Length: 238
Image 1 (cartoon, rainbow, N blue to C red):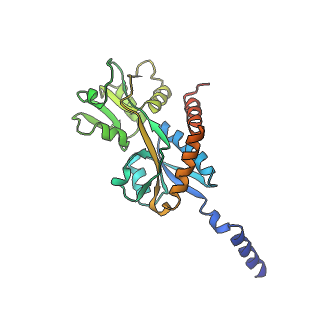
Image 2: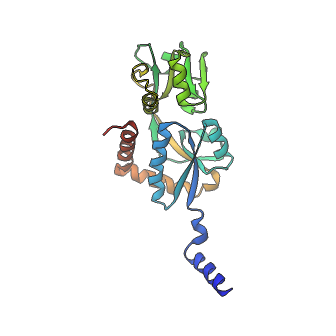
Image 3: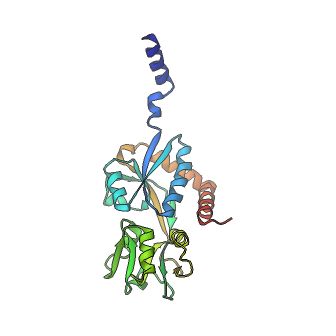
């Protein structure tokens, strides 16, 4: 018995039980390359706090259901003000990353001038991607696909005039599907959106520490450098 008591005391002294709290599980939208990049950026942020991250790859809507219910510890990255619709999710500032929603098509040629410039077309978006849902809200011919690759395959089959997805993610997916000779992005992007990391409210006390770590890495240039390196890695560039 004394050995059991001694081990228990040592665990308490050295933070044994607390160590179980050093892993956070975050929702990651499946098959979206910018979610991978954001996740790896967050790994570096949380490493400063001696916290390890694990990711649960799920569809966008499912991700929000799990994170807002507290079944997961938060979201890698989402658009600002998500807490209005999901009050149990705490927005971390400053932003961790940015996305550039862009138009991809097989046959159209025009200069993109914001979201209004695409409203007359039939449009594909990925269900659960907040930036695409918000940007196309009120447009009459919008279809939500289950995944990015599914949406690109539907565009290749001429199911839409165009699709909207993050520029980086779209380029990666088009390359993966060997459709670079058929599907291309139009310029410029529809907009640049800065996106935030979110934690479930039970981690509210942790939020300021995470925010400070992000701010410190942003100020040093480390965050931008890491993002650029990850984007090049995923695109297969040197």
